[in-house]
Image 1 (tube, helix red, strand yellow):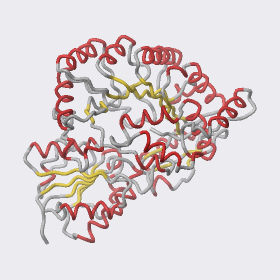
Image 2: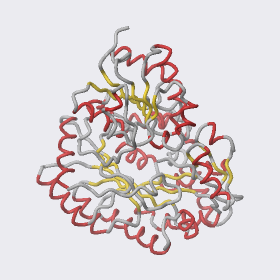
Image 3: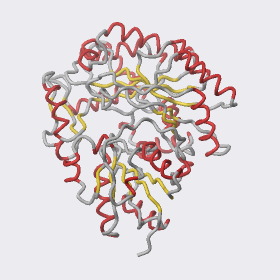
Image 4: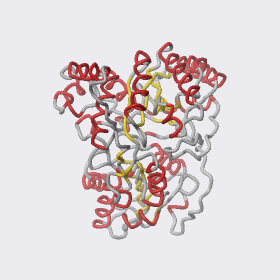
Length: 486
């Protein structure tokens, strides 16, 4: 059997979208920048690497492509990254196919949010895997290519390397990423990074050099990079430095990032707008004082909401599209959801779109049960008590007011209340849709879709949505909960 000398990284895809299965959901691309960081690190060491995304393709089709490229089978391991529990069924099928074709293949599996909670549980789900890597692998990556890898959990800060997007198969389709920082440490009860301290941002000049390098990878093509960070929180001085650094290097690139609603000031927002920030994903999660406390978002709900109001207005004033994330949480009631909706109504002119959904317990029983037990005190129960062990995904009945089925109805209702097709396309095309996916393509896909499953208003659905909203305002219709569409 002929073998290559290439390390292939495979980002596990999904057999179906994690939320509603429709054409628009299957168009989305998610660059696995963690796997790309590892591939880039090996590339700088002189090792031939390739990163392939499973997307919504069949695992067999991806493996056929690797065979056609001649990179599989290989003398070196195949690195399988599982970015979420929704990708686990795809990964299981892919591993079985790899073993069928090459019984001697060495399969190394990573993806810290999936591997880390309980490696023994995952190994039972993926018996074909030779090795599971539970944490960040940058300090280990060279060792993983040897026959005696060192799996000690070493500290892994953000590597000082520009991601080489050309290592991605079909990279031109993907919007690029620049990793800004890691960690968060704000303590929100539902967050995977609640106890992981936030890293300090690098110097603005580093970002300018990284952006210039990434731009050159795409040649003359327009890019809209995502500055990856669980909580992007520069101060005014840093933001001013970023704008100056971009200007000095002649960089005129629109970009997107993510933060909380209570950590950025209007002065910082003004400077970031000057540096090209165009879309800001904001984790509001809720505007209910009760749920703010339950989520441990803040110990001071009034101050939290006041800062959110100020930030949303600042985004609007400076031409930044604010996409607001809303999380329906354990114990949600008609009253708490109405408080959130009232806040969103008051700030509707400053909101470009929303992403709404109920909380989900991710992970095997070892970790999921901790959350499920906590949520049970608020009246929440898992839809299927065996789901944590079966899939690592536990959908939730949030309360007596909101079961899982009503969550879907309210998800669509609340999303459509604040987002039409134009806004949805703009937000998705900025970072998630293929770079060559035009509005005309989007419109054709919308026309071919069941619009009752789409999280935005269409021309056909506006009247019905408006009618439901008016009825709800009069108290003649009750809201149910939602599903996240981040």
